[in-house]
Length: 171
Image: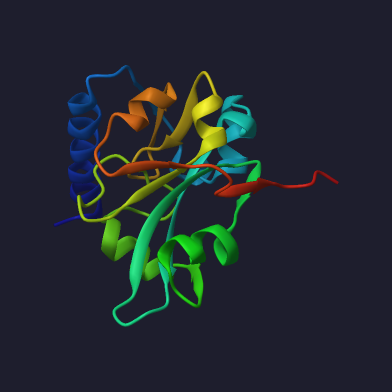
């Protein structure tokens, strides 16, 4: 299978998951070289305040515990506080990119909460839910998903977690 076939497959799964929510969404095409949040926002005119990243975290236990966390680009995930405590582990960190790709089946820079395995919990920072629209990864580096937060919240295994991420001081 070529890399393009894999991309098409994940994009088809993401589209099916979006349609299954019954909520509105729009697919936004993206140059794969500009898929990283800062480059995407600058090139396409989206505000980082409305851009949400999907980050897989790992609780260091035996076996390890994984969770997908959704936080605004202008915030920093509280990995050693909220994430660690909610996972009930002594240590938590960002999952290695190889683990993220293996668990999600998605390319780094395109990970989205849509079409994740049903066994993977999805935690959404409360600030994400207070936006009119959010822009998220689309499963590959070629597309993004623009939608109101209710589209995200319509998926199974989604939990709103207040304080999951904290604002980043702008210098």
